[in-house]
Structures are given as structure tokens and as C-alpha cells.
Length: 166
Image 1: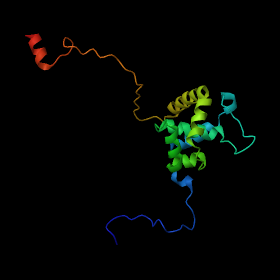
Image 2: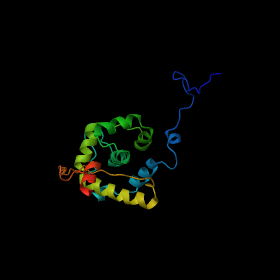
Image 3: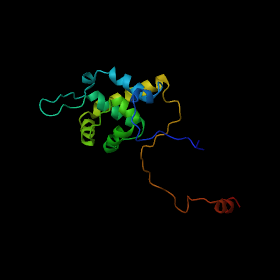
């Protein structure tokens, strides 16, 4: 026996493959996203739902929206990073059915459906607050820049304060 916990041999074939559902817990946020998006009327919200006439079939808008919202919750905004996460993140594999859209497809979906996505994300956040999904502290930074006003007259150190009090 070894003194450490050992993993499975990578070369060992499995008789029955593992199910992705087993890796996503019942209280995972990916399940909330899945139910939320499946209940939406995407055409009514303004999403462009276009099926391909020729060539390769397009991705369904619901799949790309699930990918985007899951990335939004996990602070992954870049389309290239979303593509990478769809390849390696088990939650996203479960959510998209192991589909991996390329970064250009994700970027075009975001560009073509901007107002509808903003409205959907706002509605999703309200829903998450109502069901208590956001129970931990959340901090937001908006990237604002302010002009600094730290001149010698406005800058106070401990010694400067002592001199002023005297």
C-alpha cells in the first residue's frame, strides 16, 4: 500500500463510461441556467434564430446563450476563453451537450444579439436574487477613473497633522 491516495490509471479503458450528469451536482448553477434558458421564448426576446440553408447547420441560440451566461457568472467574458472553457469545463460540457463553438461564432452571436442578451442577463440576475443563488458577497468594479487631487496641501501624513494641530 502506498502512503498517498492514488488516481486511476489513464491508460485503463473503462467498461462503462462516466455520465456527465454525475459530475454536475443538483445544486450547481449550471442547472439553473439550463432550466432558465429552456423556458425562454428566444424569438420573442429578439434573438436571431437562423437555421442554415446550405453548409453546416448553425448552433441553436439557446446553446450559445447558455455558454455565454455560464461564462458571465464565472467571470469569463472573452470568446476565446469561452471556447477553451467549453472544451475542458465539465459543467459547460454538460450544459452545451459537449458542443464546442469556435470563438468567432460566440463573438458573432454576442454582436448580433446584444440588446436581447442584456435583457436576458438582467432578468436572470433578478431571478437568481429571488431564489437565493447569490448568497455570497459579490463585489463589482466598473472601471471608472477619477482625477487624483493629491497635492501637497491636500496630502496629510502623521507628522503634518501633528504640526497643524500644534
